[in-house]
Image (cartoon, rainbow, N blue to C red):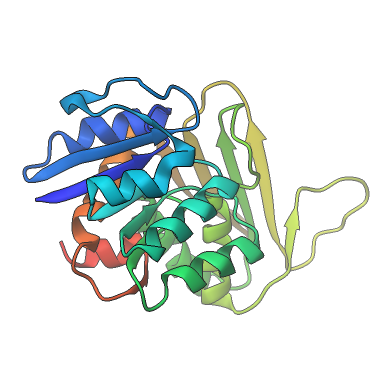
Length: 256
């Protein structure tokens, strides 16, 4: 039985994760926390506790894994708290600064196993591989990344777009990155990154490779956040029993 705790339990992702976890045999939600809505009942009779009570809730419920979909500042504290008491992690929060990433890594290394990725969808993880392969084959093509999300998303560019940049850099070597353009900006060999925010767009990512006389577009569109929730649940089931360290969704998929 995989016992899970969930921060951001009443958010859009939290709600879907609870629904997806309920479909998995031998998985049980044992704690739910949120910054608002303490006292709300979740499926299985779990009562939402205030996010400030995380350590006490984890010690009492003894989960195998904490799943975090909150905001960067809160997620860093949540990761450090859980790692400090030996609870594995699945983190889908994005927008971390280099300093926050370093703090999480220090808390995790040698203590617990953690799956940390900006996108848990299976399709996006295939998308990154396709993009890297195309970049390696089309070295002289101009590359532009366009991402679109709903109007409530706080960070830009998206974590998925930044991971896409890294996939391209790994294939090509280090490259200059330009975030948007304004004024007189003749194009060089940079990677262009552009963020769109509007309406209820779940998540669109397109990489454009433009050459002489042709262009290639590789695109992923998320129609529902269920794609992210099911991937996070899969990762939570997978991470239990793994050696301490930080893993990605690619590691989870290799085990299928």
